[in-house]
Image (tube, each protein chain N blue to C red):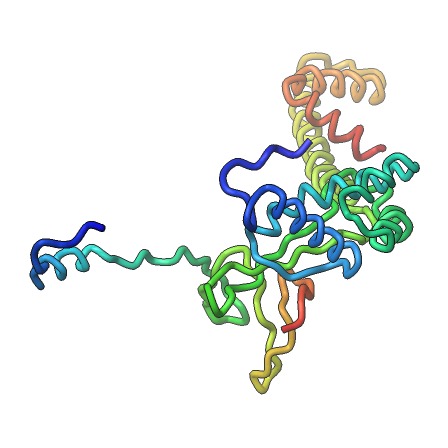
Length: 67
Length: 198
C-alpha cells in the first residue's frame, strides 16, 4: 500500500480545497399571484393550503402524487 | 425497439437488472403508478412499454412472452385484461414520468412513473385547436387581403374600363386578380382553409 512520505502542508490542503466551488442551480422564473417565484424546471411542486400544510404534489395543473 | 443501454447495469449485474426491472414493471402494472429514482424509471420505461405493446396484441404467444419476463400470472392478467383495453387507441407513450424531488438520504432525484390510462384525445384536439387558431387568422387574412385588393382593383377597373356592365363580372375579375396576386401565399392559406373546412 502506498504511504505518504511527508505531511501535506496546510497551504497545499487549503489551495486544493479552494478549488471546490458550488455551481449555481439553473432556475426558472415564474410569476404566481403577483409574486415572482424561482424554482427548479420540470419538477412537481407542493401545493399548500392557507395554513401552510402540504396537501399534494402538482405538475402542470394536475395532481401528481401525495406527500 | 428500445435502444440498448450502455454502461453499468442497475443492481449487481445484468441478471440483477433484468430481475429488478421485471419486478418494477410488475408493480407498475399492479399499482398503475410507482415512485422510484429517476435512473430506475428511465430504464424501466422501455421495458414497461414493450410489455404493454405485447399486451395490446393480446394473443397467447405474446402472453407467454410477457409471462417469461414478469414471471407472475396475476400481474400478466392485470396487464392484459385491465391495462391493454385502456391504451388500445394510444400509439406508444404508455408511461409518464414526473419529477418529484430529491430523496433525503442520498439526494437522489425521485420521480413518479405512471401508466397513461386517460382516453386518447390530444391529437385531434391539438390539430383542431391549431386549425381553429389558424383558420380565423387565415380567414381574416383572406378577407382582409382580397378586400384591399378589391378596393384597389375596383378603382383600377373603374378607371380602366368605365363600362363595367355587371358588378358580378367585375367581382369575378377582381377575385381572379386577387388570386393571381396572392398566388404566393395561396398554398398555405388554401391548406389552412382546407383544414378548417375539414
